[in-house]
Image 1 (cartoon, rainbow, N blue to C red):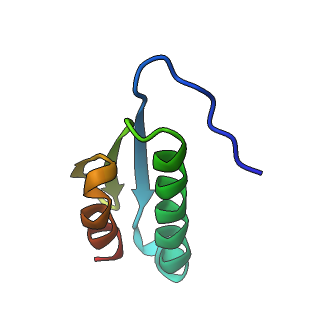
Image 2 (cartoon, one colour):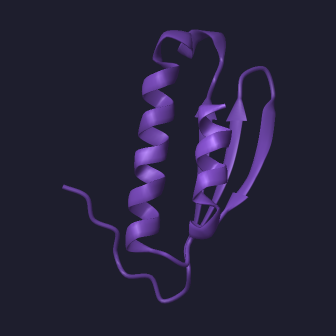
Length: 79
């Protein structure tokens, strides 16, 4: 079950993905889960903004995405 409550203003979601060496064996699951969650959030909150960052030895900002840039987000995550 997944529920995103109504938001009076467009929400800003922040994804910070751990891509460090310790996550190597789980990276494909992490990527798939992040994309699934992003799609669901945009489905329920189409005006939302999603900020994506990764960290390993440092934090890397990968951008901000809206529903119309979902294909770009998919390419960045699946990289």
